[in-house]
Image 1 (cartoon, rainbow, N blue to C red):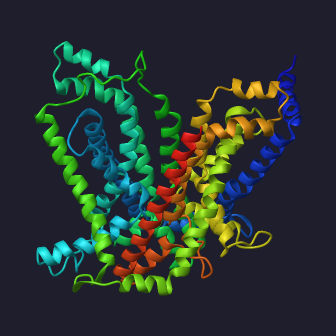
Image 2: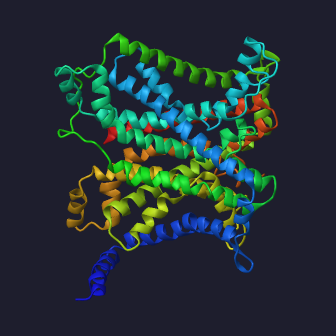
Image 3: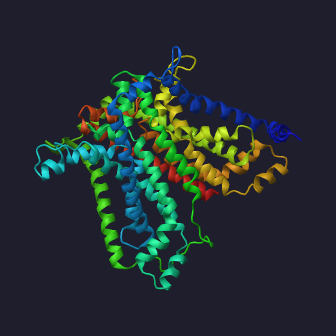
Length: 557
């Protein structure tokens, strides 16, 4: 039998199985078309713009970049910042995770809350706070230390801000591993006379190393992708994300700007693929797989007290930075007149009420779409075998894996002319958020489906229920908790996104993150702080409502 016949037979059987279920077949076609149009096509457009000219292949943009000496410094800056912030973020995350999971120190719940808070805040709030605290009119630099002139912009400030901003990613990653680690291994080492330090570096740390490497890679990716913080506080320290934006908007050179943005792809995708397909498989698991809480809980004051002081200092810094934003929104003129005032909120509601409404409308529409689409794709990839499955898997994570600046430029190039001229409309903002963050729903749905015994669905089908009925009556109710959980994070991402949408906002549809960036650019720090406080309130309200719905759903199951 020839190889072609061997290949064709499974393909025919797959097609035949799909043909028996028209609902499933329709979903597969719809998902494939959507991914090709809104995930793959924007990436094709950006590469076409860079490498194809009027007469065919054209590498003028590449040559122009390579002939520019400053670009090498920009690339080095991005990599230096990415590596440095990844190391510090992971170190902070590990200290918090180890303290919360291995001690009974006072204030653990509060430390846990503060450790994850930067995840649900706008991406550049801490950069704004750095200016309010240490800038030329800073509360600490000028009012406390009397410095009349301070330069808060540049690498050092950016490194501090990114370390605080991205440490929750490392914390959540490491906390999950440390919590599920079998403590009996450490107990056994203690019983054999090993010291606390020896147990840590011979057992605990090696078992946590996959999560440490994963955290390093994830925070490195986030640092390279970061646009808002370098834009606000980077100063003369140029990175690829901001250089691409300035090239497109300031110098009106779309082609070169697109190439600068795409140049981030190689390190970002390399780190992403290593994290997803190599580090995640390098897990050191115990034989039992059970967790325990024996003598692994640390009570020694020589260990607990230094950890507590470290956590307290970091927590105090985070509270100080966020508290500064709240105070800055309610004072007359920061650095001049600290009397209480609501004038910044009045200005925001007089001139920016439409922006607030636009932001909420876009997030409310985009969130259920991205979560449901993510759940559908996870169901298809986990439960269904069909031709093109690998394309769906790649297409569904493509826009999440690439920097937001690249995504925004790709959408701008793809949907700026007929037949799908939607630039400047709400539709393009909703689409870019859906296809960039739907992987949150995919991840939640995949994890949930892996826990659901497929025999439940098979039993439904054996009773002559079609695929749609089986999914709606059996699978979907079991996925609701995962759906609500991913909706919380997806809604937050929709509210606080900046790099992917900054090229796509318009006079008709603007977003609060872009308005904050614009206010800082014009020196209206009080207005920017007021916008941030309003965004905090919206996020907190959404968290509360979605958590109540999640708990109500869990009780009804």
